[in-house]
Image (cartoon, rainbow, N blue to C red; front, side, top):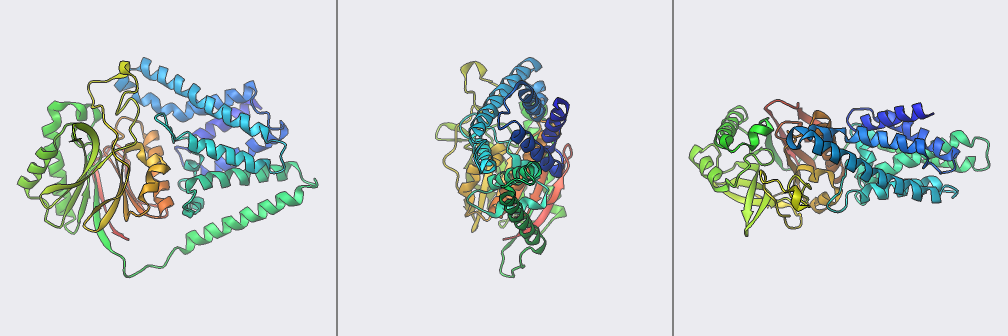
Length: 447
């Protein structure tokens, strides 16, 4: 049994990074069978071992940060974070055990898990990457995210309830409650058929939609070089060359998007002056790019909108990364980076009658951030994942897929080192750039 548990833990962890979404349903159904057999009392030594293996494998991307902070520090953080998240899961399963004898225990278990899943995104230590729905990024069931009041959390709930009902049907065939669970099964089967039908049918194309031709530019600058100030001028020259190349290849493009923090310096005026000297952009063009900016004596991780010869609007990041963008403890302060301030409440940036819902870095993983962008026309996420391995880059892209599907908006996911992607309002990746390569993708967005 312990061997099967370890295999299940490894499979579930891998499903967050790889396209293994059917396997997740089998693993969850197996968990509910185990949960029923032990009467909800799952918190034994073997189960805690399986749970720890899942967390360790899921969070293994943290080890890719060792070149930046040192292996000793990263290992310490890796183990501390494992204990922290283990405590969250132990709390969840403890509360679940209280409802194990309830008639609708499966629904209670699913609701508790989804609440904890959401609660783990709250506060300065919020960690949104355990969300169960992320395993289903490429499945057709993604259409469940069309329900705005719960969004992706509803998908996690439906997965758990469906697998719980299936487990009870397996274990209680012939029992007096069989018809109740058969009714649940028929209901969720019917919902599944509606989802698939909706996915295949799609929506009619309207002729009155606005359209914008956009290009996402992925520079792929190595992180060590990106942080070294002696290369800043060289990088600016490189960005200008990339912009000139894309402009020549895609002359009808109206919006060009670079990733987060193209230069790690307060070069807002300097970059604007350079763009004006080069005269690459026409008055109808718009350039969106990330840069540290100074406002009111504070430093922010910003996004600038350059058009008609000036930086016309900006977005200031609000959901900061602990230890990366600010130091919660004095002894952890890193003087090689800025200590950023939190930006104001998120709201769409409107320019030329288009409303952009803008987020930076792992803000894409927080549903609460994007709830402020429901009136946006287009969603934009600027990030730099050159710090991390490809597993995390895939996980990060999945968060963007769900934000697009939740709000039914096109989303532009622009990454320094990949993956960059254009995602449609149903969460389908229309175009994608591989990790570790420079390039661009272009697309005409209709909204």
